[in-house]
Length: 342
Image (tube, rainbow, N blue to C red; front, side, top):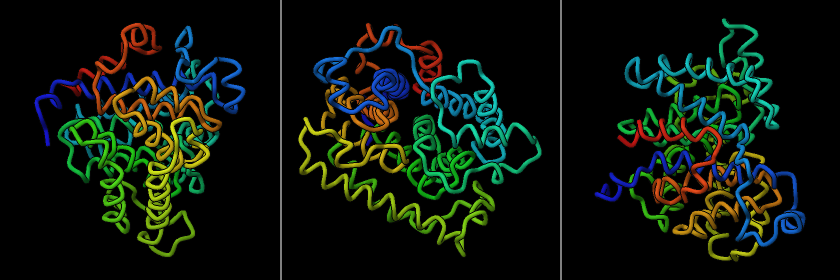
């Protein structure tokens, strides 16, 4: 249900800024285990935002997706014909950027190099069909924040932006679920029922291959039909959501989330790890992203997604000014958020 609070909370700004704050918080803790993080920074509930608050490729590629969507919408309704070229252009621009020096994922680098090398190459031939790394869904939040999209547009765009680099069906399904979670929270969904809604969504979409958005991507896999291809992804995500359901009933707040949902290097684990951190502290966003950053796995991506969920739920006011005023790319994050909050 859309309420007055939903309209005024500035969910898009809150989600984009929260994403970047989580990313910056997790940047120095990535590749460290929890004892090493605690030894370096002290109690996890007091984990400080680094100075300067520099982000990783997670935020950089989120901005690339957001810019591509803005360009596409300026040309008409969101569709594969309007979105594919802007995504490709933004991804290759990121690939060449001198600021692309934040330990980017190999899948993104290899796919973007192929997209850049041959302008006429169908993007499906650049997609890394075996990769379901979290780079697919760490950047998808803008798709869930754009108002006025149909369910088909949201799902298609979420899967397309993932598929340009990560062609594994689980990467597509996890990106679709991530965008759906951001969308639901931004529109006022209660955190208590979120996992149930996502599990239902996974069940309903299990055999739906978005041909209009994905084209012949499935033929680059070993699957015999497009339905068999996409079902593999939804089944893995459904299993991960079932694990999350159990974790929410049994995991304590002091337990490293990666011990129950996985380390987050792959798409479905980044999604469920971030959801666990958010849902443990749904009304305490700083604690949620601090918990996500103090993990043994892909800390910046888990915290990035946890921040996106918390910001979509609570809005721009969730984040203290002394943090938001010094986050890298802050001006552009606020500009894009204001565009969609309006």
